[in-house]
Image 1 (cartoon, rainbow, N blue to C red):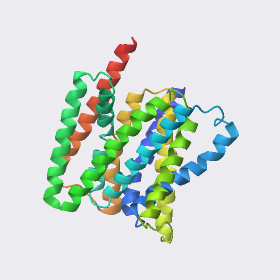
Image 2 (cartoon, rainbow, N blue to C red):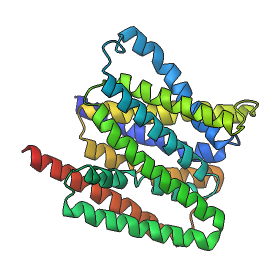
Image 3 (cartoon, helix red, strand yellow):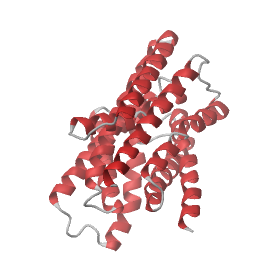
Length: 292
């Protein structure tokens, strides 16, 4: 019974997460301020639940430090990905940031984990897509290339976040980890906003509504539902399903913002997603073989 319900929740999570890039692109608030409000508000919403359940008691120092590191990586992820949407298309940014699964695989390999041959093939396909999409965008403008590079960095930091979170989740509950991670992320982004003179208030009502929708749909529902359905759905299926946020985000951006990727970019986007899917499935197959 859980399986059927969780697949429905996974579909809802994909749809909710798909709204994030178009909402960010439509918002006139400073990019780093959007990142701060998104994670800071989510942390405040989750705090009462943690206090009620008293999960903060008996927190191990090592796990807490790793959760802080994951929060710093998440801050860098949002701090690069969200600004990228001011320069390049929603489709390009969303596809490039999804490469985080590939970077997570490479980082795990650097830490000593074996990487199967199919994963290396997927990495090569993904990198071919990266080169192709940046080649298309550099022909459009220097700004588009800058956006691509920021989104790619967002993917790299996302990979660090995934790998670090994998270590933390062995010792912390989802709620404890998520709250620490979001809290640290929001605090770091707040410091950056203050130092950089980013305006944290005074936005139009429509922009506050977009930030609220982003927090609820993208953060509290999208990401949280992905974590929740892991109780019955394998991480591979969840990761592969999350790739559908790219075409959905592109469709939403086309309808709501009139923003469509150039025809030449479509093969590049396909390579990016295909390569990432190969890496995800290859690493899951390797993990299954090792545990058998």
